Image (cartoon, rainbow, N blue to C red; front, side, top):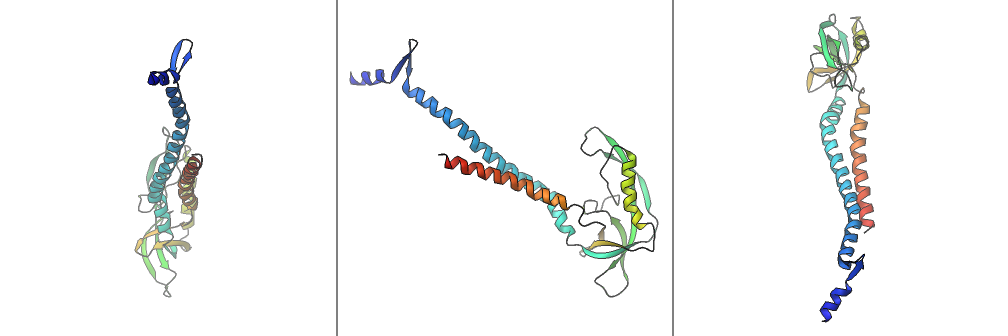
Amino acid sequence: MSLKRELVDEQIDVNGIKVSLKLLEEEQNIEELEPRTRFLSAGFAFIAFGVILWSVLGTQAVDKIVKAYNFQEGLCQANQSVVLVRNQSCQCEGRSVCQSKFPCVKVNIVVKDLRSNLNESVLQTVIYDSIYDLNAECSIGPPCKRNYQDNLQAVESFTSKFRNHSDQVACYFNPADQQQVILNRDSHVSDLFHAIFWPFLFVVIGFIMFCKFFRSK
C-alpha cells in the first residue's frame, strides 16, 4: 500500500493526464545537458580542425619556406636570352570556371657563390622565382589573372632583371643541390604567418571552450 502511495505522489495531473515527475526531471536534465554537450563537441571540432589544418599547411607551406631559408646567397647572371616555352594555360586565382594563360619562360643563368673567394662560376642552371616554382617547367608561375596582360606584366617584371647579360642579380641556391636556384627567398613570408596563425587560433579556441565547459560543471 505504501509503495502504491509513493508511485501516486511521483505523478502530477496535467489537464487530466498523469505525468511522472521523475520523467520531467530527466527531460529537464537532458535539455540542460544538450547545449553543454554541443559546446564540448564544438571544442573538439575546433581542435581537430586546427590539427588537420596544421598538418596540411605544415607540409605544403612551412616545409618549403623553411627550406628556402637554408639556401645560400649568390650572384646570378643571365648567360643567354630568355627562352619562351609556350603560353601556359592556368585556372584563374579564386575562380573555378575561369581559364587564362601566361607566357611560360625559362631563364638560364650562371651562379656565383659569395662564400668563395674565387670568382668562378658555381654552375649553369635555370633560375626560378620562388621556392614554389622550383623544378617546374616555367621559371615563374604568376598568380593567374583573367586578363592575359596582367599575367604578361608579372612575367616581364621577373625577366627584366636578366635582360642585360652583364648585370649580376642577388639570388639563392641550395647547397645540397646547386641546380636549385631561386630569385626571391622572402616572397612567401605571409604564407608562413597564415600557416602558423590559423591552426594555432583554432586550437586555442577549442581549449578555451574546454576550459569554459569544465568550469561550468
